[in-house]
Length: 196
Image (cartoon, rainbow, N blue to C red; front, top):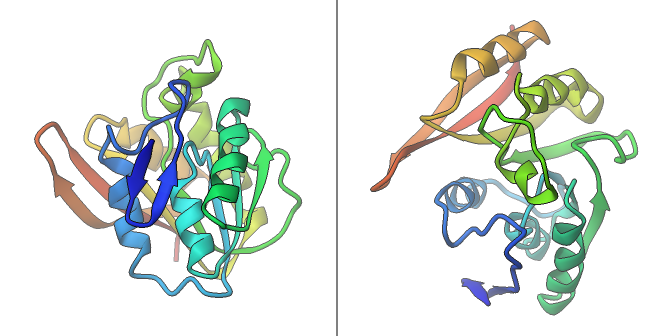
């Protein structure tokens, strides 16, 4: 059992664990600064669902997705245990999400340029050519409005050249708004915005 403030999560080994890695908590701490009540909130690739449950408990209308059915099954249980109203969809990025506009989209993406082989690999591997990021930037316009905040956490081992080129190709710009060093690595929070 993992506890974060008043949120209690049961997390199986097939799902990215927010207690073992810094990125989820860094992203969550950033999101805490944003007013969430009444906002339409999306977390694609939600993993444990910690961020989605937190947002729901702050009054956001939350959709959480993951390609891994183990993650979505456990999130259903965990959202009930935490009295959090979360709409949960098994989906590869936006694939199964009805087209709509979100106010906030929070992304902790897979970083490594390898092909996922089993379901749990999708939390780590973005495809040999960074297909996750290509798909993200290709589809993002269908789910945002002019004031949507799209926030993504990355770390120093990412192929930033590839990610920035993919964003640029689809009319987006990544702006670093925070960075934090821990014992093992430096993590960064980026805002994804339309190029001016």
